[in-house]
Length: 105
Image (cartoon, rainbow, N blue to C red; front, side, top):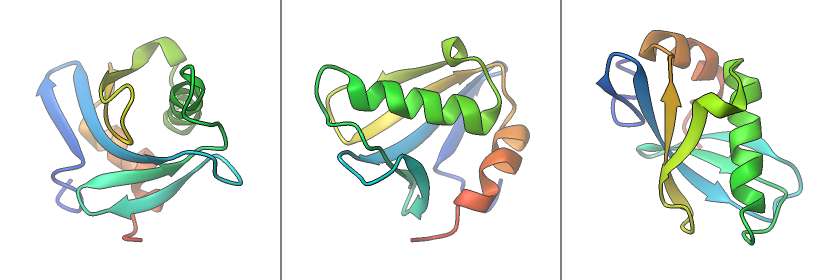
């Protein structure tokens, strides 16, 4: 976890908080990489009616191999900077699943 100390935090034994920066209206939905103390995520959906937020959750669920119900937006529902709450995943597992995406961009 030394590679990304501010991106992923663990407030308790069963919860992770992941800081992200979202770029809506992208050509495709993907994890772009590390951007400072956040993970940059591009989504094809526009930032309206929760469409971009749904794509973020779907992408993270697929990447982290978790059900969507275990991932929720904790803060920043209407902002590009968000904190995502992930339940029942350890920091080491999250880091392993995300590490190929965490190169600085």
